[in-house]
Length: 141
Image (tube, rainbow, N blue to C red; front, side, top):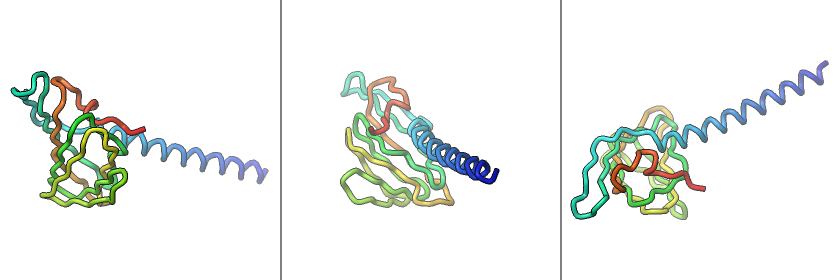
């Protein structure tokens, strides 16, 4: 009987662990789709392209997950602090008033540097006209 309880306890603990890890991965991928489009404007000198300004929020302890952009991205930190991790480069923590950029295909992750307060940033993209918010960032493989 004790052996059965031990086995059930181990199975339960393993299930909880898998659920937490899977939930974290989903939330990181969902973070790439999250954001509020503040402005879209056609780029007159670049037919079929538009500039998109997005308010991104990263919850306390949250992160975007490793991903890439199809074009350039410029991000300005409004509130809180974030840590930018670019593959092959040292991590860089940015505070309000600081900015970073990424280039097409560059694998990176943005983490909230705080576990107790959220962070906000403005992200600027150049994309094909009508691009959906979730198409601006693609999870890295």
